[in-house]
Image (tube, helix red, strand yellow):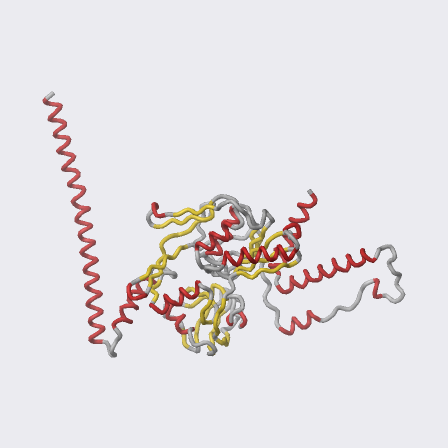
Length: 445
Protein backbone atom coordinates (compact mmCIF):
# COMPACT_ATOMS: atom_id res chain seq x y z
CA UNK A 1 0.00 0.00 0.00
CA UNK A 2 2.78 2.39 0.90
CA UNK A 3 4.50 1.55 -2.36
CA UNK A 4 1.29 2.37 -4.26
CA UNK A 5 0.86 5.71 -2.50
CA UNK A 6 4.45 6.64 -3.09
CA UNK A 7 4.14 5.72 -6.75
CA UNK A 8 1.01 7.85 -7.00
CA UNK A 9 2.72 10.74 -5.25
CA UNK A 10 5.73 10.42 -7.51
CA UNK A 11 3.44 10.37 -10.54
CA UNK A 12 1.66 13.51 -9.36
CA UNK A 13 4.96 15.26 -8.69
CA UNK A 14 6.23 14.25 -12.13
CA UNK A 15 3.05 15.61 -13.69
CA UNK A 16 3.55 18.93 -11.95
CA UNK A 17 7.14 19.12 -13.16
CA UNK A 18 6.14 18.27 -16.75
CA UNK A 19 3.32 20.85 -16.71
CA UNK A 20 5.70 23.48 -15.42
CA UNK A 21 8.27 22.56 -18.04
CA UNK A 22 5.67 22.90 -20.84
CA UNK A 23 3.99 26.05 -19.49
CA UNK A 24 7.20 27.94 -18.82
CA UNK A 25 8.33 28.13 -22.48
CA UNK A 26 4.79 29.11 -23.58
CA UNK A 27 4.66 31.86 -20.98
CA UNK A 28 8.11 33.06 -22.00
CA UNK A 29 7.07 33.05 -25.68
CA UNK A 30 3.91 35.06 -24.95
CA UNK A 31 5.92 37.56 -22.88
CA UNK A 32 8.47 37.89 -25.68
CA UNK A 33 5.71 38.50 -28.26
CA UNK A 34 4.11 41.17 -26.05
CA UNK A 35 7.49 42.84 -25.55
CA UNK A 36 8.09 42.76 -29.31
CA UNK A 37 4.71 44.45 -29.95
CA UNK A 38 5.56 47.25 -27.53
CA UNK A 39 8.97 47.63 -29.15
CA UNK A 40 7.27 48.01 -32.55
CA UNK A 41 4.87 50.60 -31.12
CA UNK A 42 7.85 52.49 -29.70
CA UNK A 43 9.40 52.33 -33.18
CA UNK A 44 6.20 53.80 -34.65
CA UNK A 45 6.30 56.63 -32.10
CA UNK A 46 9.94 57.31 -32.89
CA UNK A 47 9.27 57.50 -36.64
CA UNK A 48 6.23 59.72 -36.07
CA UNK A 49 8.29 62.19 -34.01
CA UNK A 50 11.12 62.25 -36.55
CA UNK A 51 8.67 63.00 -39.37
CA UNK A 52 7.13 65.82 -37.34
CA UNK A 53 10.48 67.40 -36.57
CA UNK A 54 12.65 66.61 -39.59
CA UNK A 55 10.43 66.25 -42.69
CA UNK A 56 11.17 68.87 -45.33
CA UNK A 57 7.74 70.45 -44.88
CA UNK A 58 5.46 70.87 -41.88
CA UNK A 59 3.00 68.00 -41.62
CA UNK A 60 -0.55 67.76 -40.28
CA UNK A 61 -0.40 65.44 -37.26
CA UNK A 62 -3.99 64.28 -37.69
CA UNK A 63 -3.56 63.52 -41.38
CA UNK A 64 -0.34 61.64 -40.66
CA UNK A 65 -1.97 59.43 -38.04
CA UNK A 66 -5.02 58.78 -40.25
CA UNK A 67 -2.69 57.77 -43.09
CA UNK A 68 -0.86 55.37 -40.77
CA UNK A 69 -4.14 53.83 -39.60
CA UNK A 70 -5.40 53.49 -43.17
CA UNK A 71 -2.11 51.94 -44.26
CA UNK A 72 -2.42 49.36 -41.50
CA UNK A 73 -5.96 48.45 -42.58
CA UNK A 74 -5.40 48.45 -46.35
CA UNK A 75 -2.41 46.12 -45.90
CA UNK A 76 -4.88 43.43 -44.75
CA UNK A 77 -7.06 43.16 -47.88
CA UNK A 78 -8.59 45.43 -50.55
CA UNK A 79 -11.83 45.95 -48.58
CA UNK A 80 -10.58 46.97 -45.14
CA UNK A 81 -9.99 50.70 -44.71
CA UNK A 82 -10.21 53.72 -42.44
CA UNK A 83 -13.10 56.13 -43.03
CA UNK A 84 -12.52 59.73 -42.09
CA UNK A 85 -15.56 61.56 -40.64
CA UNK A 86 -16.42 62.85 -44.14
CA UNK A 87 -16.02 59.42 -45.73
CA UNK A 88 -18.10 57.79 -43.00
CA UNK A 89 -20.87 60.31 -43.63
CA UNK A 90 -20.68 59.68 -47.39
CA UNK A 91 -21.06 55.94 -46.80
CA UNK A 92 -24.15 56.49 -44.63
CA UNK A 93 -25.65 58.66 -47.38
CA UNK A 94 -24.90 56.02 -50.06
CA UNK A 95 -26.82 53.34 -48.20
CA UNK A 96 -29.84 55.67 -48.35
CA UNK A 97 -29.50 55.83 -52.13
CA UNK A 98 -28.34 59.35 -53.08
CA UNK A 99 -24.84 60.83 -53.35
CA UNK A 100 -22.59 62.84 -55.63
CA UNK A 101 -20.03 61.32 -58.01
CA UNK A 102 -19.49 59.33 -61.21
CA UNK A 103 -21.56 56.27 -60.38
CA UNK A 104 -18.97 53.48 -60.35
CA UNK A 105 -18.06 50.83 -57.80
CA UNK A 106 -14.29 50.27 -57.76
CA UNK A 107 -11.66 48.06 -56.20
CA UNK A 108 -7.87 47.89 -56.55
CA UNK A 109 -5.89 45.37 -58.56
CA UNK A 110 -2.21 45.39 -59.56
CA UNK A 111 -1.88 48.95 -58.26
CA UNK A 112 -4.60 50.31 -60.53
CA UNK A 113 -8.26 51.09 -59.92
CA UNK A 114 -10.53 48.40 -61.35
CA UNK A 115 -14.19 49.04 -62.11
CA UNK A 116 -16.37 46.45 -60.41
CA UNK A 117 -19.45 47.87 -62.09
CA UNK A 118 -20.98 51.09 -63.39
CA UNK A 119 -24.34 51.89 -61.81
CA UNK A 120 -27.41 52.11 -64.02
CA UNK A 121 -28.35 55.55 -65.26
CA UNK A 122 -25.26 57.29 -63.85
CA UNK A 123 -22.72 59.51 -65.68
CA UNK A 124 -20.19 56.65 -65.83
CA UNK A 125 -22.78 54.30 -67.32
CA UNK A 126 -23.81 56.89 -69.92
CA UNK A 127 -20.14 57.51 -70.82
CA UNK A 128 -19.65 53.81 -71.61
CA UNK A 129 -17.53 52.74 -68.61
CA UNK A 130 -17.70 48.93 -68.30
CA UNK A 131 -17.15 46.34 -65.58
CA UNK A 132 -13.54 45.15 -65.69
CA UNK A 133 -12.12 48.44 -66.98
CA UNK A 134 -8.86 49.62 -65.38
CA UNK A 135 -8.56 53.32 -64.56
CA UNK A 136 -4.91 54.31 -64.87
CA UNK A 137 -5.08 58.13 -64.79
CA UNK A 138 -7.46 60.77 -63.47
CA UNK A 139 -7.19 64.14 -65.23
CA UNK A 140 -3.76 63.06 -66.48
CA UNK A 141 -2.49 62.10 -63.01
CA UNK A 142 -1.45 58.46 -62.56
CA UNK A 143 -3.21 56.46 -59.83
CA UNK A 144 -0.33 53.95 -59.65
CA UNK A 145 1.07 53.97 -56.12
CA UNK A 146 -2.07 55.46 -54.56
CA UNK A 147 -4.23 53.44 -52.21
CA UNK A 148 -7.89 53.02 -53.14
CA UNK A 149 -9.20 55.84 -50.96
CA UNK A 150 -6.65 58.27 -52.41
CA UNK A 151 -7.60 57.29 -55.95
CA UNK A 152 -11.29 57.70 -55.16
CA UNK A 153 -10.59 61.14 -53.69
CA UNK A 154 -9.05 62.14 -57.03
CA UNK A 155 -12.32 61.22 -58.77
CA UNK A 156 -14.48 63.22 -56.38
CA UNK A 157 -15.48 66.77 -57.15
CA UNK A 158 -18.37 69.23 -57.32
CA UNK A 159 -21.54 68.21 -59.12
CA UNK A 160 -21.40 69.55 -62.69
CA UNK A 161 -17.60 69.53 -62.92
CA UNK A 162 -15.75 67.62 -65.64
CA UNK A 163 -13.33 64.74 -65.14
CA UNK A 164 -11.23 62.82 -67.67
CA UNK A 165 -10.32 59.24 -66.77
CA UNK A 166 -7.90 57.09 -68.76
CA UNK A 167 -9.07 53.52 -69.24
CA UNK A 168 -7.34 50.28 -70.19
CA UNK A 169 -9.85 47.72 -71.46
CA UNK A 170 -9.35 44.10 -72.46
CA UNK A 171 -9.62 43.80 -76.23
CA UNK A 172 -8.53 47.40 -76.84
CA UNK A 173 -4.99 47.91 -78.12
CA UNK A 174 -4.44 51.33 -76.54
CA UNK A 175 -5.61 53.18 -73.42
CA UNK A 176 -8.30 55.76 -74.11
CA UNK A 177 -9.77 58.77 -72.34
CA UNK A 178 -13.38 59.10 -71.20
CA UNK A 179 -14.81 62.48 -70.25
CA UNK A 180 -17.51 62.43 -67.56
CA UNK A 181 -19.55 65.20 -65.95
CA UNK A 182 -20.01 64.58 -62.23
CA UNK A 183 -23.62 64.49 -61.08
CA UNK A 184 -25.80 63.68 -58.11
CA UNK A 185 -26.27 59.93 -58.12
CA UNK A 186 -29.83 58.93 -57.27
CA UNK A 187 -29.97 55.18 -57.09
CA UNK A 188 -33.28 53.47 -57.74
CA UNK A 189 -32.63 50.17 -56.02
CA UNK A 190 -35.11 48.18 -58.14
CA UNK A 191 -36.66 48.88 -61.52
CA UNK A 192 -39.56 46.61 -62.50
CA UNK A 193 -41.05 46.09 -65.94
CA UNK A 194 -42.74 43.39 -67.98
CA UNK A 195 -41.26 41.96 -71.17
CA UNK A 196 -43.33 39.41 -73.12
CA UNK A 197 -45.22 38.08 -70.06
CA UNK A 198 -42.02 37.99 -68.02
CA UNK A 199 -41.53 40.32 -65.05
CA UNK A 200 -38.00 41.75 -65.09
CA UNK A 201 -36.71 42.97 -61.73
CA UNK A 202 -33.54 44.98 -62.29
CA UNK A 203 -31.77 45.26 -58.91
CA UNK A 204 -28.99 47.86 -59.12
CA UNK A 205 -27.83 47.95 -55.49
CA UNK A 206 -28.60 46.59 -52.05
CA UNK A 207 -29.45 49.64 -49.96
CA UNK A 208 -32.11 50.03 -47.28
CA UNK A 209 -34.83 50.40 -49.95
CA UNK A 210 -34.08 47.29 -52.03
CA UNK A 211 -36.47 44.71 -50.59
CA UNK A 212 -39.26 47.26 -50.22
CA UNK A 213 -38.86 48.39 -53.87
CA UNK A 214 -38.65 44.80 -55.13
CA UNK A 215 -41.81 43.71 -53.31
CA UNK A 216 -43.90 46.67 -54.47
CA UNK A 217 -42.48 46.55 -58.04
CA UNK A 218 -43.30 42.86 -58.45
CA UNK A 219 -46.83 43.35 -57.09
CA UNK A 220 -47.47 46.27 -59.47
CA UNK A 221 -46.29 44.32 -62.53
CA UNK A 222 -48.45 41.30 -61.67
CA UNK A 223 -51.48 43.55 -61.17
CA UNK A 224 -50.88 45.36 -64.50
CA UNK A 225 -50.54 42.00 -66.27
CA UNK A 226 -53.98 41.00 -65.01
CA UNK A 227 -52.92 38.51 -62.36
CA UNK A 228 -50.22 35.97 -61.65
CA UNK A 229 -51.61 33.52 -64.21
CA UNK A 230 -50.73 36.05 -66.94
CA UNK A 231 -47.04 35.99 -65.94
CA UNK A 232 -44.80 33.13 -67.08
CA UNK A 233 -41.86 33.84 -64.77
CA UNK A 234 -39.44 36.28 -63.14
CA UNK A 235 -36.03 37.51 -64.28
CA UNK A 236 -33.94 38.84 -61.39
CA UNK A 237 -31.29 40.97 -63.10
CA UNK A 238 -28.23 41.36 -60.85
CA UNK A 239 -25.75 42.31 -63.57
CA UNK A 240 -23.31 45.06 -62.58
CA UNK A 241 -24.77 45.13 -59.07
CA UNK A 242 -21.78 45.76 -56.76
CA UNK A 243 -23.58 44.63 -53.60
CA UNK A 244 -24.39 46.53 -50.43
CA UNK A 245 -26.22 45.60 -47.24
CA UNK A 246 -26.09 41.97 -46.14
CA UNK A 247 -29.53 42.06 -44.51
CA UNK A 248 -31.10 43.24 -47.78
CA UNK A 249 -29.47 40.38 -49.70
CA UNK A 250 -30.95 37.97 -47.16
CA UNK A 251 -34.42 39.55 -47.47
CA UNK A 252 -34.36 39.45 -51.29
CA UNK A 253 -33.30 35.77 -51.24
CA UNK A 254 -35.97 34.98 -48.64
CA UNK A 255 -38.59 36.66 -50.87
CA UNK A 256 -38.38 33.68 -53.27
CA UNK A 257 -37.52 30.81 -50.91
CA UNK A 258 -39.86 28.85 -48.66
CA UNK A 259 -37.24 27.29 -46.39
CA UNK A 260 -33.59 26.38 -45.97
CA UNK A 261 -30.35 28.21 -45.44
CA UNK A 262 -29.69 31.42 -47.36
CA UNK A 263 -26.11 32.17 -46.33
CA UNK A 264 -23.72 31.54 -43.47
CA UNK A 265 -20.81 33.64 -42.27
CA UNK A 266 -17.69 32.31 -40.56
CA UNK A 267 -15.12 34.50 -38.88
CA UNK A 268 -11.85 33.82 -37.13
CA UNK A 269 -13.65 32.42 -34.11
CA UNK A 270 -16.01 29.58 -35.14
CA UNK A 271 -18.36 30.55 -32.32
CA UNK A 272 -18.93 33.94 -33.95
CA UNK A 273 -20.40 32.48 -37.14
CA UNK A 274 -23.97 33.21 -38.19
CA UNK A 275 -26.47 31.22 -40.22
CA UNK A 276 -29.46 32.84 -41.91
CA UNK A 277 -32.48 30.79 -42.93
CA UNK A 278 -35.48 31.47 -45.14
CA UNK A 279 -39.00 31.84 -43.79
CA UNK A 280 -42.16 30.55 -45.46
CA UNK A 281 -43.61 32.64 -48.27
CA UNK A 282 -42.65 33.13 -51.94
CA UNK A 283 -43.53 36.48 -53.51
CA UNK A 284 -43.46 34.86 -56.96
CA UNK A 285 -45.82 32.06 -55.96
CA UNK A 286 -43.44 29.40 -57.25
CA UNK A 287 -43.19 30.90 -60.75
CA UNK A 288 -39.97 29.85 -62.55
CA UNK A 289 -37.05 32.24 -62.20
CA UNK A 290 -33.86 33.18 -64.00
CA UNK A 291 -31.09 35.15 -62.27
CA UNK A 292 -28.82 37.19 -64.54
CA UNK A 293 -25.22 37.80 -63.39
CA UNK A 294 -21.93 38.98 -64.88
CA UNK A 295 -18.45 40.02 -63.79
CA UNK A 296 -19.89 43.16 -62.20
CA UNK A 297 -22.15 41.19 -59.84
CA UNK A 298 -20.43 41.22 -56.45
CA UNK A 299 -20.89 40.58 -52.75
CA UNK A 300 -24.61 40.81 -51.84
CA UNK A 301 -25.51 39.97 -55.47
CA UNK A 302 -23.51 36.77 -55.18
CA UNK A 303 -25.27 35.84 -51.94
CA UNK A 304 -28.65 36.05 -53.70
CA UNK A 305 -27.50 34.26 -56.86
CA UNK A 306 -25.75 31.54 -54.83
CA UNK A 307 -28.75 30.94 -52.56
CA UNK A 308 -31.30 30.70 -55.38
CA UNK A 309 -28.96 28.50 -57.42
CA UNK A 310 -28.12 26.08 -54.59
CA UNK A 311 -31.82 25.65 -53.75
CA UNK A 312 -32.58 25.14 -57.45
CA UNK A 313 -35.10 27.94 -57.17
CA UNK A 314 -33.67 29.73 -60.20
CA UNK A 315 -31.57 29.08 -63.28
CA UNK A 316 -28.49 31.34 -63.27
CA UNK A 317 -27.63 32.77 -66.68
CA UNK A 318 -24.77 35.04 -67.81
CA UNK A 319 -21.07 35.00 -66.94
CA UNK A 320 -19.06 34.31 -63.77
CA UNK A 321 -19.59 36.83 -60.99
CA UNK A 322 -16.91 39.01 -59.38
CA UNK A 323 -15.93 36.72 -56.48
CA UNK A 324 -16.12 38.92 -53.38
CA UNK A 325 -17.01 36.50 -50.62
CA UNK A 326 -16.03 38.51 -47.55
CA UNK A 327 -18.05 40.42 -44.98
CA UNK A 328 -17.04 43.91 -43.84
CA UNK A 329 -18.14 45.30 -40.49
CA UNK A 330 -18.22 49.09 -40.15
CA UNK A 331 -17.14 50.05 -36.64
CA UNK A 332 -17.64 53.64 -35.42
CA UNK A 333 -14.52 55.29 -34.00
CA UNK A 334 -14.00 58.32 -31.80
CA UNK A 335 -14.15 61.62 -33.64
CA UNK A 336 -17.01 60.46 -35.96
CA UNK A 337 -14.70 58.36 -38.13
CA UNK A 338 -15.16 54.65 -38.75
CA UNK A 339 -13.22 51.51 -39.58
CA UNK A 340 -14.30 49.08 -42.28
CA UNK A 341 -12.83 45.72 -41.29
CA UNK A 342 -13.16 42.33 -42.97
CA UNK A 343 -14.50 40.11 -40.21
CA UNK A 344 -15.83 36.99 -41.94
CA UNK A 345 -16.27 35.02 -45.14
CA UNK A 346 -19.70 34.04 -46.33
CA UNK A 347 -20.76 30.66 -47.69
CA UNK A 348 -23.62 29.60 -49.94
CA UNK A 349 -26.14 26.97 -48.71
CA UNK A 350 -24.00 24.20 -50.25
CA UNK A 351 -21.15 25.28 -47.94
CA UNK A 352 -19.00 26.78 -50.70
CA UNK A 353 -17.07 30.00 -50.32
CA UNK A 354 -17.37 32.39 -53.25
CA UNK A 355 -14.17 34.28 -52.40
CA UNK A 356 -12.05 34.67 -55.56
CA UNK A 357 -14.18 32.04 -57.34
CA UNK A 358 -17.50 33.79 -57.85
CA UNK A 359 -20.83 32.18 -58.76
CA UNK A 360 -20.72 30.16 -61.96
CA UNK A 361 -23.85 30.42 -64.12
CA UNK A 362 -25.84 27.30 -65.02
CA UNK A 363 -25.87 28.58 -68.61
CA UNK A 364 -22.95 30.70 -69.79
CA UNK A 365 -24.18 33.50 -72.07
CA UNK A 366 -21.81 36.26 -73.14
CA UNK A 367 -23.12 39.75 -73.86
CA UNK A 368 -22.03 40.82 -77.38
CA UNK A 369 -20.01 44.06 -77.46
CA UNK A 370 -21.88 47.29 -78.11
CA UNK A 371 -22.33 48.15 -81.75
CA UNK A 372 -20.83 51.30 -83.16
CA UNK A 373 -23.30 53.95 -84.31
CA UNK A 374 -22.61 53.17 -87.99
CA UNK A 375 -23.35 49.47 -87.41
CA UNK A 376 -26.62 50.29 -85.66
CA UNK A 377 -27.71 52.48 -88.59
CA UNK A 378 -26.91 49.66 -91.01
CA UNK A 379 -28.88 47.16 -88.92
CA UNK A 380 -31.90 49.48 -88.82
CA UNK A 381 -32.20 49.63 -92.63
CA UNK A 382 -35.31 47.78 -93.87
CA UNK A 383 -34.64 44.49 -95.62
CA UNK A 384 -35.87 43.90 -99.16
CA UNK A 385 -39.16 41.96 -99.39
CA UNK A 386 -38.71 38.26 -100.19
CA UNK A 387 -42.13 36.89 -99.28
CA UNK A 388 -45.08 35.48 -101.25
CA UNK A 389 -47.20 38.44 -100.18
CA UNK A 390 -44.72 40.78 -101.88
CA UNK A 391 -45.28 39.17 -105.29
CA UNK A 392 -47.61 40.96 -107.68
CA UNK A 393 -50.88 39.10 -108.12
CA UNK A 394 -50.35 36.64 -105.25
CA UNK A 395 -53.47 34.83 -103.99
CA UNK A 396 -55.19 35.97 -100.80
CA UNK A 397 -55.59 33.62 -97.85
CA UNK A 398 -59.35 33.19 -97.47
CA UNK A 399 -59.20 30.24 -95.05
CA UNK A 400 -58.73 32.40 -91.93
CA UNK A 401 -61.18 34.52 -90.02
CA UNK A 402 -60.43 38.15 -89.16
CA UNK A 403 -59.78 37.16 -85.53
CA UNK A 404 -57.29 34.50 -86.61
CA UNK A 405 -55.50 36.95 -88.90
CA UNK A 406 -55.34 39.52 -86.09
CA UNK A 407 -53.90 36.89 -83.73
CA UNK A 408 -51.23 35.95 -86.28
CA UNK A 409 -50.27 39.61 -86.66
CA UNK A 410 -50.09 40.05 -82.87
CA UNK A 411 -47.89 36.95 -82.54
CA UNK A 412 -45.66 38.26 -85.35
CA UNK A 413 -45.35 41.66 -83.63
CA UNK A 414 -44.41 39.93 -80.36
CA UNK A 415 -41.77 37.86 -82.16
CA UNK A 416 -40.32 40.99 -83.79
CA UNK A 417 -40.23 42.69 -80.39
CA UNK A 418 -38.36 39.69 -79.00
CA UNK A 419 -35.88 39.87 -81.88
CA UNK A 420 -35.26 43.57 -81.18
CA UNK A 421 -34.61 42.77 -77.51
CA UNK A 422 -31.94 40.26 -78.59
CA UNK A 423 -30.13 43.10 -80.34
CA UNK A 424 -30.51 45.48 -77.38
CA UNK A 425 -29.79 43.01 -74.55
CA UNK A 426 -28.94 39.49 -75.66
CA UNK A 427 -28.53 38.07 -72.14
CA UNK A 428 -31.94 39.32 -70.99
CA UNK A 429 -33.57 38.03 -74.18
CA UNK A 430 -31.96 34.62 -73.56
CA UNK A 431 -33.30 34.59 -69.97
CA UNK A 432 -36.82 35.39 -71.21
CA UNK A 433 -36.56 32.62 -73.83
CA UNK A 434 -35.61 30.16 -71.07
CA UNK A 435 -38.74 31.11 -69.10
CA UNK A 436 -40.89 30.81 -72.23
CA UNK A 437 -39.60 27.27 -72.68
CA UNK A 438 -40.27 26.35 -69.05
CA UNK A 439 -43.76 27.84 -69.27
CA UNK A 440 -44.53 25.90 -72.46
CA UNK A 441 -43.25 22.71 -70.83
CA UNK A 442 -45.52 23.23 -67.82
CA UNK A 443 -48.58 23.76 -70.01
CA UNK A 444 -47.88 20.61 -72.01
CA UNK A 445 -47.80 18.41 -68.91
